[in-house]
Each structure stands twice: as structure tokens, then as C-alpha cells.
Image 1 (cartoon, rainbow, N blue to C red):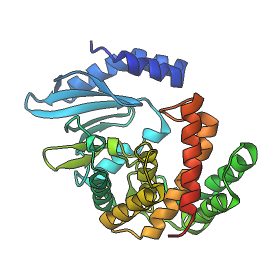
Image 2 (cartoon, rainbow, N blue to C red):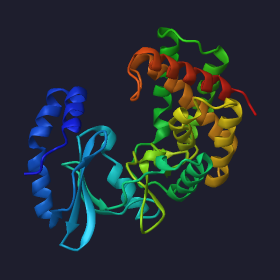
Image 3 (spheres, helix red, strand yellow):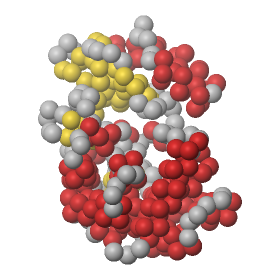
Length: 310
């Protein structure tokens, strides 16, 4: 029986409680069943992400692949749909899927990610080019981001009223305008939904391939905001923050062949969301204390900076 990583088990229980415990108890059996059904043998140490385990395998004793099993959650439902739509174009290939068990057999790539690259322009360029390649017509059934617009607006207004914050009115108004003017009229284009450097891995078939998509239909510029938000830790100590932020926007928009203004507006929307989220829930890298305070203040700064047209 395959042993599950202790850190993954602990984090799952902390996040999910009793349902997490019950799922973990059955997880080794699920993995064994899928290995047998898909004719795979374990071929390396079990790895994990935030919500799932990844088992390196050999399929039919020849082909290398990975078995991924995720905790059953609505946010994980459409990952295989995105992989099927891409068909290996800019993302790992999907070999098999079991939607009941939230499991997939995927192309194996390397363990190093785009986050390991020190050149910031290269990171943003690679992400932008992948964003362009992943922007294909969305299949039916995927969640449409435009359908979230009303909830986004309600959440932003509620957070602004309920939470203590330093956001100027102009920054909040800019995010609300993005929801009204861009959020409700988004195209039926497949977007990754969580495009950041740790979700882009080195590969052999292509230099870089995307993993862990959410599988949304919407504006490809939306993921420009996701990427910039994920670059926050690299921007914290920038000598000239305004210059550094606009460099990311310029490079991403050019590589992705997107309108820079749309990328800027979505990035500003994401920054406002992050500023409020940090105050309510903390961040993955900081749940409390001085580091959390520093990151929420930085999100405030980004939201204000990006609200200015330039």
C-alpha cells in the first residue's frame, strides 16, 4: 500500500476537517485501484501539491506518466476538461480520467518549475506565450467567469464596508469598473485560471508546459492579473516598484498578444481582491503577524498603483 506524505495529510485535515480525514483513509485504496485499472506501476516518490497527490508511474511498463488524485472539491472539477480541450498544446497531455475519484493519468514532466528561473523577464515572457497558446475556444459546460461578475461586485462592496483598510476610493472604484465593463462581457475562451510560475513546469516534449488549470471560460487578460499577483514576492524589494510592475505588464501583454490596458485592469482587480482576502483569511505564505501585515499593505499599494493609467 502506498504511503501518503505526512505534510499533505496534515494540511488536508487542517483545511478540510473530518471529510479530509475520511478521504485520506480511503486514498491509498483509490490509488491502488487506479494503478491496476490503468496498468501502471509506481516509479518514484509520491509528491503532492496543495489539494492532491501525484504518483510517478510507468504505464504498461514503458511510458512514463503521473497519477494525480485530488481532494473532491468544486474547484477541481474542470481540470481534465481543460486538458482535453488543449490536447497537449501548451499543457501536459491527459491520458485517462476518473471524474468520480477526481483522478487523472497525465504526461510526466520534470520537477523544476518556471519559478526556479531567476530572470524575471523570462518568467513573464514564458507565461505570456503559454497564455496565448492556451487561449482556445472553451468547450461547453465550463464555468463562465462572466457569471461571477455580480458576486465579485457584491464581495468587493461588502469587504470595503466591513474590513478596515487603507484603499483609497479611487482604487476600489477602478476594480468595480473592471467588473462592470470587462467582467460581464467576457468571451467564451478557455483560460487557465491560476497561471503562475509554479504551475508551469519544464518538459521534454516542449520547453515548458502548464499544469493545474482551473478550466474557466473568460478573458485571457484575466490570467495576466493572476500572474502579476503571484509575482508579488519578487516585487516586494524592487528599487522602483512602479517601473517593475509596469515592466511585468508590458512584457506579459506583448508575449500574450493582449491589450495591455485590459491586462492592467484585471491586475488591479486581482490586487484589490488580494488586499481584502489577506485581511479576512491571510495568505498561504503568511497567516498572521508582521509578514501578513506587510503583504496586505503591499497589496494595497499595488491596487492603488495599478488604478492609475500609464
